[in-house]
Image (cartoon, rainbow, N blue to C red; front, side, top):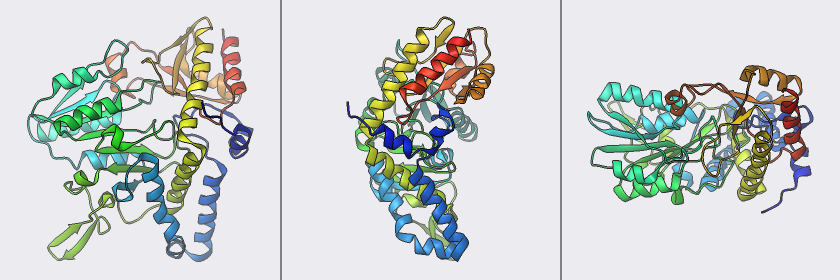
Length: 392
């Protein structure tokens, strides 16, 4: 296991002086270089003007595409920058053509916003949505997916790690099935980017959406989309402007020949710079080291939770990620979170409806969610466990 310079990383994370932040699956604490890049750019905008600051920083802004491409193993022309992960996902999904009887295959862990989009397209086009069965551990079963394939399957779209727990779906195994049958594959990697290594070629995904604010430690209001070059050139974005498409003459336009056909002209350039710095920061720390640290902290937390009476852990799968969902018998999740907030610990709540899994299993209670990141310390994990023990 690679080791991290934890003291330095915590020193570069100002927020750890104020709170124990275990809500990284919601929005992680930004490191100082990200904040500095954004604030210095905003000051420059105030000093010389927005257009002028963008022109002055054109090279730095352009390099964000290189940073994100390195992060996911793609090429810079396969990256589009968006306002958030939902927009990134929607731009890819709504660009795909569907006809009556076309099948969309998804997972029980699919994010609620994505599933609503499936329902809308099914209503509009007559496509049908089908859920891939899970194995005995609650993980998507690639063999079951293989058995579902026929010539009507137009899309495989799954959530790699759901927002409500540590489940990790076998994204690469799904990609192998998709490639074997030539089916487009859309991967929601919101909770994976910044938490574990990503290689779009190894994953076999044609499209990947992600956010900046979660484990990547970037600013809110940022996201990005990867689209494989070959597929990208066949897709018509659901909306275009004169940035994504060149206005040729009164009756014609021509789409850009890269993934930026999914972008629009006006953007938050300070946030884009912050996103690029966040990607560079994660790469410099080392994604494998980040993964190992996140897993170690999550395992410490789960082991501690399971040792306490009246605590139930709800994470699925044999190798869960750094999102830990649990309940305290006799206490509502909101009350647990309130007491944690009073003690200076940031947690979040996982409410039914956040994923299809929640919708299918309505007997599940509202859960507390703790999501440690590599800059958290063992003492912070133990502080949460000590607080929960007192709640008995």
